[in-house]
Amino acid sequence: MAGRSRLSPVGAPTRGTTNPNRLRRVDRWIASSPATSRLLRATVAPLVVDLGYGASPVTTVELARWLRRVRPDVRVLGLELDPVRVA
Image (cartoon, rainbow, N blue to C red; front, side, top):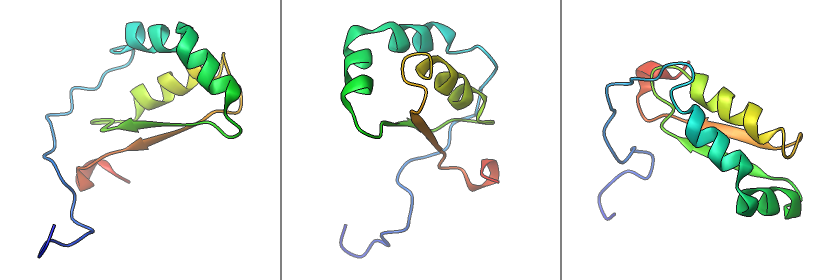
């Protein structure tokens, strides 16, 4: 990374086709996975990161709702590369 600013994002924004319930099957699968449940329960302060939440953070919020069924205090952080989409 010589010569490159450490603050510069790496990647390119997508078109942002985020819609409510778009990832419901993935969210349900993640939340019902025995491995995920085991990790969430075994971690002192669980943090799940959603990389690239898209045009709106709706899918990040939905993921958080599913994961909180397993671990009510889980923190979910949504990150987005496109500065226009970040408030």
